[in-house]
Length: 112
Length: 112
Image (cartoon, rainbow over all chains, first blue to last red; front, side, top):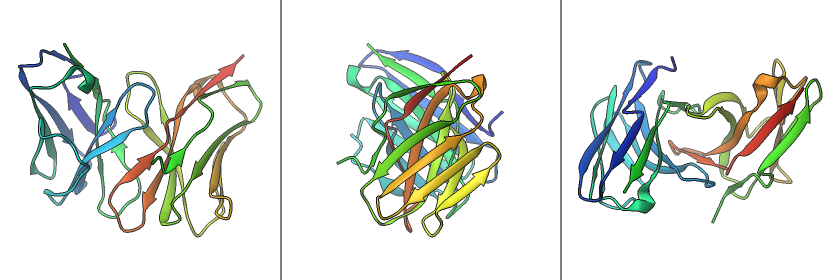
C-alpha cells in the first residue's frame, strides 16, 4: 500500500470514448501530479496541482483535462484520444515544497 | 532537450557485488536529485535523495554521489541482492519548482 491509489489499473478505450482516471491519496499531501510514461521514454510531467490550484500544464493537448476537487483527489478526464496516447499514466503526491514524490501504481491505457 | 540522462539502458551485476548506476544532467539550477526504483506493473518507489549542497548521502546499502562540476550523479548498491532487480530512474528537481524531471531509466538485473 503506497498511500496513493489509482483506478482503474487497466483501461482500453476507443478514440471516440470519454473516460476518467481517478487518483486518491491518503498521505495528507497538498500537491498532486499527473505523469505519463510511454514505452522507452522518460516519465513526462503533465500537470501539477498545489493546494488544489493548477500550477503547471506542460503543453498537454486539450483532450486531457485534469480536475482536482480537493487535496486528496485528482482526476484525468480523457476524450477523443489518439492511439499514440497509449501509455502508463501515473499519479503522484507530495508535501508542499518537498522533493519526494509518492507514486500510485498507474493506469495502463490502451487507445484503439 | 533532455535535461536528465541515463545513458545505460541496462546493467547486469552478480549477486553480492556492487551495482553502480549513472546519471548526467545539464541544468545547474537543479537543487535536489533523487533515485526511484520501479517494478513491473507498479509505480516508482522513492529510494534516496541528495541535496545539491552535498556530495554524498548514504542509506543502508544505497549511496548516492553527486559531482556538481561534472554534472553527474551515481547510485551505488552494495551488496547487490536479487530483489534489487528493477528499473532505476534518476530524477532532479528545479529549485523552487514543484516538479521532477526524470531520466529514461536503467534496467538492473542481479544474477545469482
